[in-house]
Image 1 (cartoon, rainbow, N blue to C red):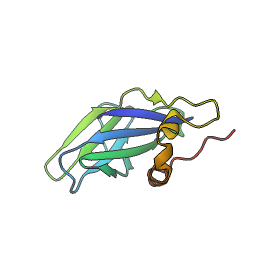
Image 2 (cartoon, rainbow, N blue to C red):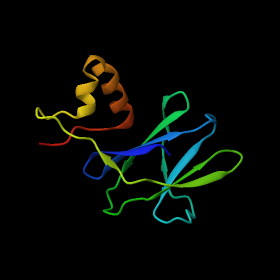
Image 3 (spheres, rainbow, N blue to C red):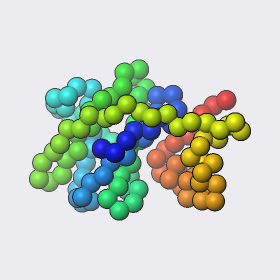
Amino acid sequence: MLTTLSTGTGHRVVLLAADSTHSLRASVHADEAAGGDGEPVPLIPAGEGLFALSLQDGSGRETRWLKVEDDIGHVVLTIPEAVSIPRTQVGGSVLSAAADGGKRTVRAIARRLGVRRPRR
């Protein structure tokens, strides 16, 4: 687990590094035991050995544990507190301002993650 970014009210993006790229599955859980199936979350490839997961906390309570499994076994990871993405004076995020030259790439990643612009 690398980090968690807060991209809006009740919405987080988790960045995960993994050696295995085949047959990985992920689910989020409200308790550390991670019993049962949990809520499945798609793993989106975001680079070599890097995956992104988009979490929406619509129930009002944050999911705190991520269960990642493959054909061999599983691991339960604590999802760290989300880091807020700061906003610039013109309303964009610092990340989008830094990636000004690669806006097309940033938009494509955001679309794949299902990130939506916050309502003003």
